[in-house]
Image 1 (tube, helix red, strand yellow):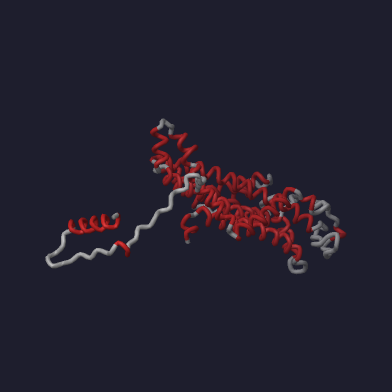
Image 2 (cartoon, one colour; image 1 turned 90 degrees about the horizontal axis):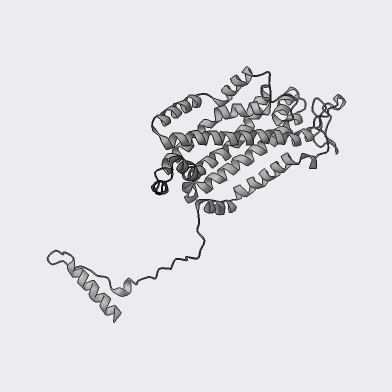
Length: 329
């Protein structure tokens, strides 16, 4: 009876269409177009979010697993260097200058008679600390400036954008060399970090500005304003948290660049003091014996390359997880 009723409805609907004289409208039989049941929505299933989907994607990404293992190992070396070596990296004996590797000293000695293995292990803490501090402050300063410019717009956006353009026109390495030459008498980790933040916040600010301009026009901001929330509360409680995805991607990718920049400045002799145990300092001192003892330069360079590669792979994995276009591709 139900089938006859549906056929009559189809026939009635067909008669309502305007047809040309002599034209017959084809109506498919009901058996050829069966109705499919739609699965009901499971209301008990937990709600998903962008961060949950990103974590689910990261756990299945081999690139993330490999980079995470490397980064955990690097952090362990930086926090507990005494577990891997009992030698003092600053204890140098000229009689051991350029001595080959042995069981007690697997990497041998450098030109000053220092244990290379101990210096590579303890140098992890310095290089990683500079990279992490610089990245954290760059993300903080750049996100704040970019968020203010994108949220308020108008003359605020115009002034901050012009300041950003000025710093964007300055090459980071050249600007760092000029600033460090001005304060060459004082060398410390904080001075290196300050220079990196001074010239590195620009890229994060541009990304944060674009993300905030997109988020402030969404419905949740309008609803929050309608409920009586102030603009600054909307900015820091709703808009910035919803704009963090591209900022995190840029920060993760840039961390390796700041580690390389520290090594470059130390290699040029204007970075950390020579008394500091750092990969950049060791690479700088090893260039004098590169032709006769290349292993002195090889070990700190390999440690630097592995660390930078690990953070670059982590940045690529995070980008694929947080970028919907990359995830869809």
